[in-house]
Length: 76
Image (tube, rainbow, N blue to C red; front, side):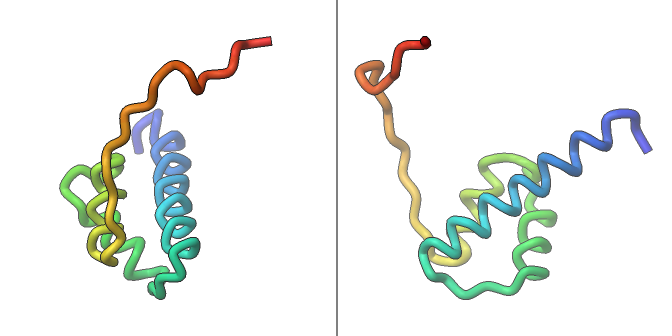
């Protein structure tokens, strides 16, 4: 066990939660253990690419969006 393994566990659960949230929002049926297995077996796990690819497995499409500075709120 490496000294930074505790960080990996949290980020992995965040990745699973994000994926589950998108699937729930899109009303897509999924199995929790299958979702976890798809994420963990991805070559680039844990990464946003693994999230995108797993969502594509469930036919959830994605696209890149370039956001301009006009939407940024000033810090108070």
